[in-house]
Image 1 (cartoon, rainbow, N blue to C red):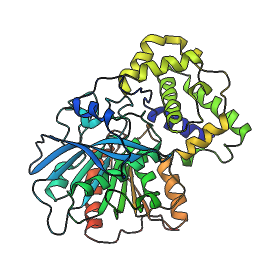
Image 2 (image 1 turned 90 degrees about the horizontal axis):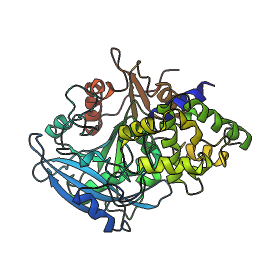
Image 3 (image 1 turned 120 degrees about the horizontal axis):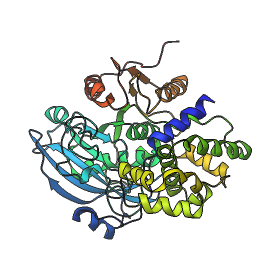
Image 4 (image 1 turned 45 degrees about the vertical axis):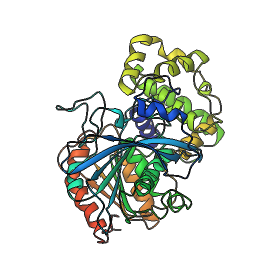
Length: 433
C-alpha cells in the first residue's frame, strides 16, 4: 500500500490546474498573437521573440515562442524566457542551461515568462521577499550569466498561448518542451557552435527533467531547427516521478477498477485534496484522447471543473472551488470510474520512460519534504542504477523542505554543472553494493 499512498500524495501536491480553453483568458499581446501561428515547422523553430528588460549584470533577455510536441508527438507551440550574456558568443560557444519550473497552474496566462520583469533569479511567491502571485525567474541566473552560460526557461505547452490545453504533470510532454527549448537556443545562434546542454528543474519541472533524460531517440532526432543537441547532465530538485509508484499489475482491469476509486476516496477527505485530484485527472485526459473527464466525474462535475480552471491559475482556482462547493464537492465524483485500465496505463505513459538516461543524473532532496516524498527519487535511482545508469542522490544539509530545496541545492549543483561543461567525468552517484 505504500506505493499507492505515495502516488496519492504525489498527485495531490502536483496536480495543479489544467482545465484551460484556448483564449478564455486575457493574454499580453505577444502571447495572444500566437493564436494565429501554426506549429507545423521543425522542432525548436522560433516563431516569435520579444526583448524584455533584465537587471542581471551583463545580460539581455527575450520572450520567445518555439515549436515543440507533446507525448503523442502532436506539434505544439511553447513559450519561454531566454537570458544570455550580451554580445556575440565566443569562438568556443556558450554552455546551454534549460530550466524547468515548478507548478504554476494550467490556464494560458499561468506561464512564468508572462510576469513583469521575468528575467531575474528565482522569485518564489510564498517566501518573504517574493514579489508576485506565482513563482518565476531562473535559479542561479546571475551566477550562470557571469560564467558565460545562456539560459532558457520554458513555460511548457498550454501556458503561454498558441492554443492547446496544458498537460500538467504529464512529464513526457514537459520533457519534450525542455529538449526543444534547447534547440530554440541553437536556432537563435545564442550558443554559437556549442551544442552541449544541461537540464535542471524543480518539482513538476524535476519530473520533467527525469523524463527528458530518458528520451534519447527524441534528442537525437534530425530535421529539427538545431540538430545535434547533446545533453550532458540532468539535475532534478525534489522531483515528481509517478511511474515508480504505480503498483505492479495495476493496469489489469480488475486492479485498475479498484485503484482509481481508492485514489478518489483518498482525495475526498478535504476539498483541497479533491481539487488537486480533479486537476490531475483533467490534465491526463488532455494528453490522451481516449480518456474523458466524464469517466471520472459526473457531467455537471466535469463542466464545473472546466469552467473554474480554464480561467484561473493554481491557487485562485483551488480557492474558487473551496468557496463555491463547500461540503458538496463529493457529488461531482462518479461512484465507479469508467475506462479505469486505460487511465492507469496513461498515468504511466505520461511519466518517465523506462529507457536509461542518456547522461548522468543528480537528484537533490530535503528530508522534511512532505510535498514530494523523497522515496520517489530513491526508487528512480535504484531502478536506473540496477541497469547501469549513473544516478546520484543527495540529501540537503539541515531540515530542508520542498520549498527550500532550490536555494539549498544551488551551492551543490552549480559546481557539478560546471564540472560537466569542463569535460570532467561525473563520479558514479549510485550507491555502492
